[in-house]
Image (cartoon, rainbow, N blue to C red):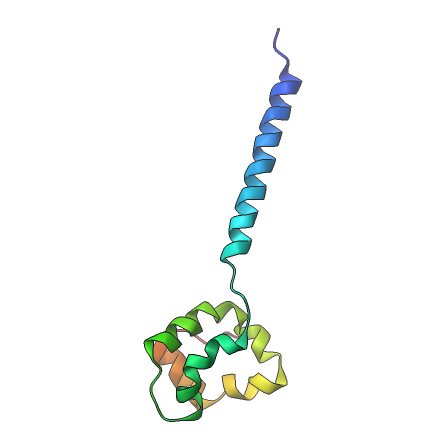
Length: 98
């Protein structure tokens, strides 16, 4: 006679471990929101230089953080500026509607 309680417990434990592992992968791949990561974009934001590939790469990495930056009054004007719109179009990173 099989002990179905032990089998169900084993499946539950396996499922629980998979959720933990996948949860850690999700957390480790999440963006670290740090506006200083956008420093390669300074020449585009404060000057007339087109965004570099490094700038576009950093902008794409920080894309999940843009709504948080827009909530900060210090950054809101920069993100809503015409320069930022042009930069987002050039880098193919849409400005989110938050």
